[in-house]
Amino acid sequence: SDTILAADVVTKLAAKMRDPDIGAAMGQLVASNRNDTWLTSLIDMEYWLACNEERAAQARFGAVMCCCGPCAMYRRSALALLLDQYETQFFRGKPSDFGEDRHLTILMLKAGFRTEYVPDAIAATVVPDTLGPYLRQQLRWARSTFRDTFLALRLLPELDGYLTLDVVGQNLGPLLLALSALAALAELAVGGSVPWWTGLTIAVMTMVRCSVAALRA
Image 1 (cartoon, rainbow, N blue to C red):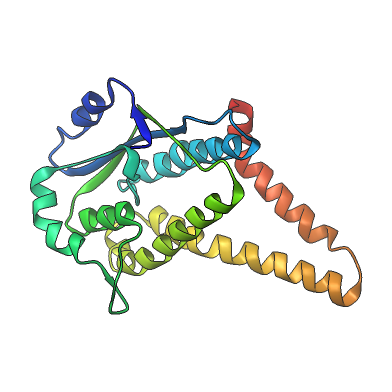
Image 2: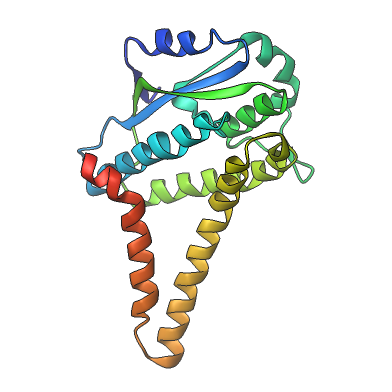
């Protein structure tokens, strides 16, 4: 309802699915409203990083860990085997209905299929243009990431070691960033000194991560 697929997306994803070992494939996402606000421009940059750095690297090592919902194709025969598990998602004994794309991708990997990324299959999707909806979206996605990490842990020994490093980084990175920010605020409140070193470190890490996308933009 909020995504426009390029005319050749289905053809390109289907071509990748000719390999019977591949259970799912995803295309590249861009923000269709990227020129609306400063936030949509930043989200478009983040989508580029998520697809062309994170997903591309995961695919190189055999397993995209989340085939994003707006532009993904699944093998029907594999999906039929997983449908019962997919439709009855539970977490800590309670029904769970968020992050269904990540959950289904993990189920595909657990069933022994590979997942792939196809960078030239482009889908343009509407992204939040104000901070409130964006933060609510990010909270849902973060909950999904943490929840499905538990599901993926038993899977990781069968996959390339890079993917273990990637999953650990995805979960620990935001926690370490939050702790760094809290420590900086505590230093400012208690000691009265500006925590410039912490701020500089976070800024440098951010620039390193975003430099490729910034140059592209």
